[in-house]
Image (cartoon, rainbow over all chains, first blue to last red; front, side, top):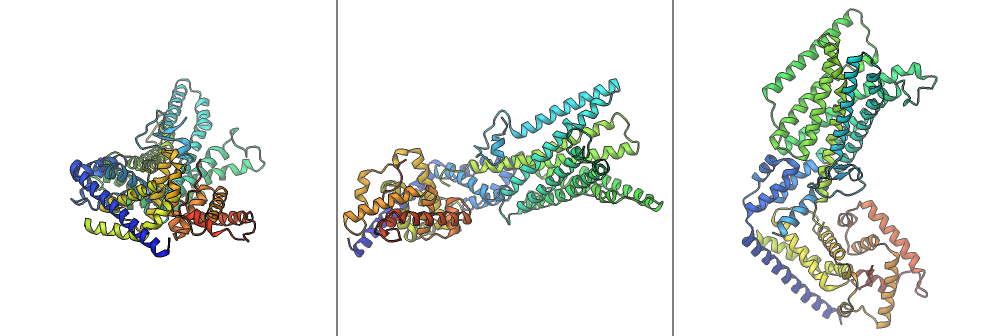
Length: 104
Length: 316
Length: 189
């Protein structure tokens, strides 16, 4: 296979992969709107934070998250980093993403 | 054997990973610390009762000289180990790293002080220096050095550490205000300290020449006042946040400071005749739960950090 | 906002997708698993960014999550680590004749046996152009440890190159290509 042909094959494979990724994103969006609402997601995240910082602190943190939850992880991660350190807070966020956001 | 609310002793010392914050084993390191201290106290109070009934002080003396001394040293060692591990859990530049750095230093001073007072200046069989030719003359200054290490040096570092912790609470928006009973207590204590220094001033004017070791211990009471202020702020902040592992940590520091202050006040009250025998004996026992509280605090912090790390998703 | 994020994902895929896929194939030993992993990793990137997580070093993040995802999958299904003969045929053969390809593959297998899994990972990531800090972040180790691992790799490669008679002092390029480009030399145990 020549270099040009190899690049073409790689490009086609790349486009196919990107379509798969877009498809997976679309499926996730559809699942999100069907199965869980943003308040429910925030509630579940709050229940994860509460054992560390307390239920009232958890409520106050989530109260500062926007309605669209597009600053959920940065807000929660910021506060958890202060009290647990960045490394532990990052692993905590990984757990939140895996168990609540990806699988919901 | 020792499982700290889901963290085995080995795990808490960083040798093994933690499972999850929801794991509760029947015996935690925190529970272990509390149970051992409670058992010690129970034995100590029983021994005090025997003394009060029989008049024989040997049992009380032996209790504080050997098992009491060993427990204090063990608790100080655990405080140091856990505080150091908590410090290592924060990266350079993170605000809490400074807090735990100073708390670890305070714990190191506490170990040094406890070692000097409870072991190296004691006449018990535990003291390796007891047979040395220099020891009889040195015992006194070893004891003084222990008081300075476990008093002024330790409290200065702890006060700095708690200050940094309060800064983090303020930055997070969780710092609460003091209520009027808190302010009354602080005012009362401030008055006591002023009175103490006034008394000292009068004594110096009348020819008292305080030794260097005594002067080195003058900052202890003002430092205790600062610590009590910090402990109250932490207590109010934690109460406002609700119960959680981080809150338990800082609450434990508050309890430790309160108990140390109580011990200090009981010594003063006895010296000025406000507290009579046998009630002053209760002041001797307060140091055990105080040490336990200072050991529990970093244990809770470490548990929270390890549990957050262990609860992480498998993909990172 | 979601359109911007999709564009961000598409941009990252364009930049790093091919290299990530080769890295995944090398780790997984099978292109299907590698493709599944890549899809999962980019989906996860999208979700984390959707909820506001800051990812300052996307390339290192992608490698780290991909690596951990594959290690978890391979731990859960150990049989997946055995190379499927069907996968061999679907991989593009390196340039040169079949005898040379076989020799390179055997040389790569010798090198892989000489290196520990951590050293092999570190070599693969570094060969992808990740900086020491990015490799450290991906493998959850300190940058100094990355340097130490690579120094060990160099020593072992020099020792292993002595075992290639007639090839001179350097390790054959084909062997390195097999090591890095996803040819199935990953240990089956």
